Length: 227
Image (spheres, rainbow, N blue to C red):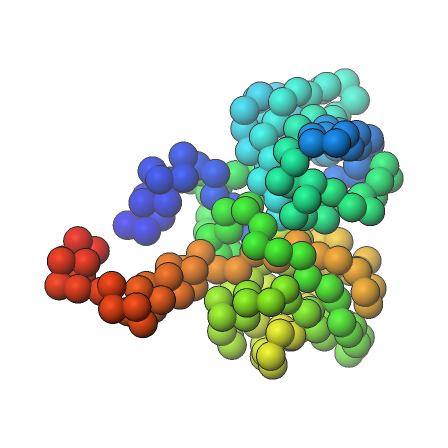
């Protein structure tokens, strides 16, 4: 039921956090209030049309053009995207990016529901290799840890990860070999900036708890939401 609700409300612009492939930035233009990005991809571009959504390092972008011969697609970058995500600072031609196409009703749900709307930019505070695994610590922007729980889900550069532990503003992960092999997290070192999206369900819980604290949850509110 939640699956169908999200498709109806979000018009299909939902992702799973399971990266399909790593693309390469062919070019990126940044202007005062907008920009454009061109990405080389092995996606079957015959099955991608203008207006489709693709998550690039976790950022939901709309395809505005494609070149099947060069295996590239283009997307516009808004002022908001440039200002609040890693796509606006430091990203250059040649950089590799995580790619995922929007979820469809037939897509297996392997990760968690990801909207592609970035909540903030985090910084990798520590990285320790343990055999084939990597322990990663990411410092979150202020306030976001209210939406994170141990063993819960969070998207880092579009990758669905399970929280191993958290302390204050730092979230800890254990990255498995498959994720390291199939995403750009294998290339991220200490101090690198990463896009953060917390779990959408956690956002609803926080919002409703806030209403409760303010005394806004009433019998009518509960009835309206099916309780």
